[in-house]
Length: 193
Image (tube, rainbow, N blue to C red; front, top):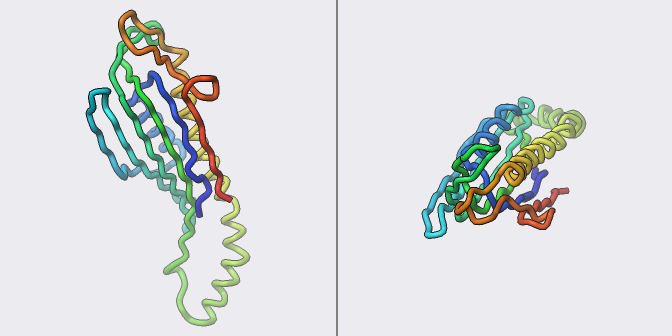
């Protein structure tokens, strides 16, 4: 079942692509998710690097309940720039970032029951009264953990606009903008019912 439906954020400005990936790995370790790289494409254009990265995160809640979070990262026109970061001349990235999230809860019952009639009846009783009670606590966890990752990425990107001071002759004046505050970051949420 889908519980977080195509929630996304957009950002344009300075950031560190490597630090962004490290932040995602740290989040996965914190919540005990197993990460898989589903797809990774890079293309060099006259305006910079374009990156499309698809990540999947898997976590087992119980012997039959699994969380699955899909994260799609798209970076466009990424260039390297030298700026003053926390008072130190540093090479960072500048570009447009979009991150989309989908969170699922899977329940795996196949192969756990025999096909005899009396066992099938007991299975229906257990499915109806026991597993539904157990399952009800997991959708909230999927939503909470997916939004935690989204919020960590959003905070990480927003910090750059406060930590950066452009050096003369470097950068394009995009200290990091979000659409919520008149710049270019936007968060889209569509919660599944």
